[in-house]
Image (cartoon, rainbow, N blue to C red; front, side, top):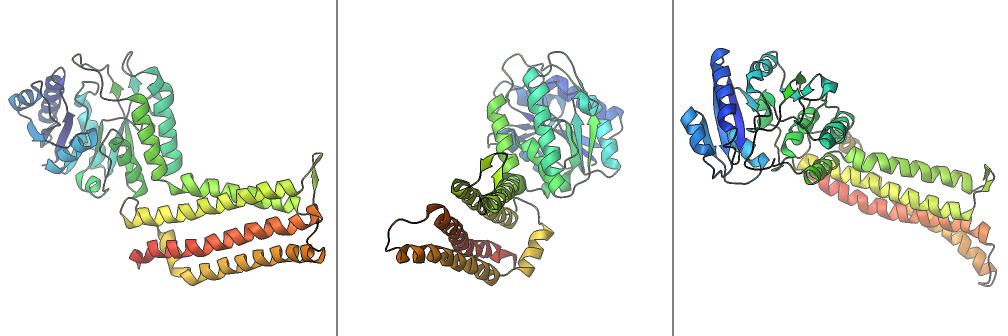
Length: 383
């Protein structure tokens, strides 16, 4: 069998018959050897009976959620390719052959695009303005920027893919973010992606409102994007904070006047805070990346493999220990000056130029030692 068409279903009696009729008729007219599967998530409105009457195969999925329903349908699919689409009549299943053609060309995932930026069309009343002009374009931009996914409509639910490819993505999400997870992981795993412009029609359901919840599902998508990208969540902000901290130190230690401002001890304190925060973010980036790869949430990264081949626990201990000792030494210089003064008043601007860098170095060194053990522990499963 070449193709399985999977429709997730939860009380879609208003539109299910129309969708199934289009899908089944298209398979026959296009000469595609396939099946249509309705992944039912507990419908009580007669949707199951409609599907069975029309000749679709019904798969009952007990676990609730859009992602769970689709996963159950995918597991039951027998086709080499799968095309998925919502059962609300917003997608025209007569466009199935266009997706199959792309899959036959060798693409792993073929994403539909409803937005004009990708050549698609949104009919009047088919998509809320907030989704069309902000939410979807914004998340699609993030998908391209953060994961290099070549898509302009990350939320489009009409798409096709190789069944074996999707099975290897190890998807974990159970809700609406399941669809965006597929694109993110397909791109991270080096999949070959294509985009097909489609037309979005108004939702045909009358018995109930759409299952999508704008802000709840938008937050879930953003949360998933951040968890899937330690680089953008931790590494990039961390590197920026470290750069700002180093720049602040380089200007404040000699007491530079910049644009009429005297950068002094207060700048040193703030720069030290930025450096410590930045270092912690970089450590979080490493830990999150290693943990995500080890648990199968993120794909293998040759840069991480190279890091563990070249850098051992002892390297981190030596570097951290050296930073800690250097920091203590700087603090000792200030303490010696205090001792010589009989523990009286000190030259504040001068001694703080030893105390602040010393404190920052000691803190960073101590954290580096502990972080070296943690990163090494997380990486043990990779050896």
